[in-house]
Length: 254
Length: 254
DNA sequence: ACCACATTGGTACGGCGTTCCATTCGGTTC
DNA sequence: GAACCGAATGGAACGCCGTACCAATGTGGT
Image (tube, rainbow over all chains, first blue to last red; front, side, top):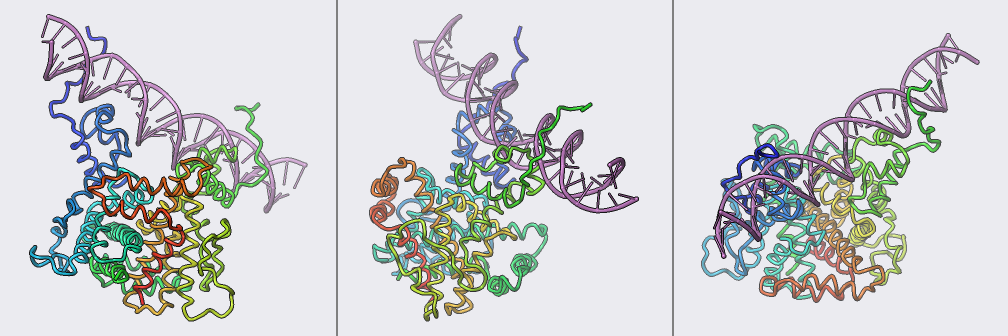
């Protein structure tokens, strides 16, 4: 006679670290930063916390792994430039030269183009997964060792090197670039969420109005600059504006 | 007859929003980001959560208020340059020109100096209160309306304006500066905490060694750039390096 | 047939933010 | 002075979280 009630039968589809990470990304995407919960995961897999803890040490590691998985896909693979699959979700209404015409012999200023491509890849990854912003800036600040942030630093830095920047400026230039990229991309993602709050059917005009209006609602006496800038933000393309910042920093390196 | 046991007598020293914020900052400074807890606060004030919730809406507001309080003290007051009390904790072993000789007539390039001063003030505030880094980058990304981050943006942007930057570049330049300042300052604060882990009696040499060694432990094949940079990071002054980044971005604006 | 062990899933614990409410007491009103 | 009101207080409880622990399970080797 069973001392306890019969347990539910053991699952047939194996629980994998990969499947758990995949589910974690999905939860983060759909339910936001606070949506990733061991309880939500146990419910998703119809299991108990122990089964998940067998594959993952703790929540921090799971979050880092989710970040790693998403960022790795957006980063060039290996030492060469790599694909860095950017911009296939929108019709790319502003087809700036980030995507080279042909993968033939790279021109002289290839590193600059590559930096723009890497930056845009990160921009779009953060746009698609807003929780990345907190995670990446936080990890970068926390200097996590085994995390993905050194990969980002390396991907940018190597191309700064190739750009011909004097060695003494390597760290400074790369720091400026990475901090700008992650920060600005995060701000863009936050803006998008602010705009999404208007409702799913708001067009881009309304959305941009709403975003820039939040800045214009500030006290005119205390925030003249921010209000002045709000107007010019209204009718600029997000990616264009973002890349302008990258170019600005790159210009100072040469 | 009392239906319940006699309550503890009512406190004589009034509980104020200011006193609560002050205690919150203290808890964050001494116990880290996770140290701010309503339970810790109730114990500190020998009271219950309800008394604190009377003065503060929730934990988020309390955190924002603590951030606001600390950052406001580090930011110039009002539209003029203001004091921005920077560098009085260390003997300022690298007395760069950030602090002007005299508060007399500002020279032609005053805006650049002012930006350096504001940046250094934020740098030191974040160094003294490491929890600010997460809070500020997070709030900036989250675009919180009533927070202190617009003040930072405004303080920098107004001086970018005064620098003679063309209007079309105002937003880009200010974004680049602010994201770099907060990101780099956060990274510096994290480095300091990594160094503090060595023990309270480690000198600066050991500490810098340890920090740069964390970078050098990376895989030589995958991280040639980061490792190359680690060496040159070792013997640079933190503030100097930080301000070099500010100057780099400023150079691109002119 | 057995067993060792990787894997699973249930239960429990302590701590968190937050809510609710009985209680207190300084000030106002008659 | 007595009665009263409402701002302020502090205690207890709720629901959720991450996590530790462990009995139950089934599979592959012997």
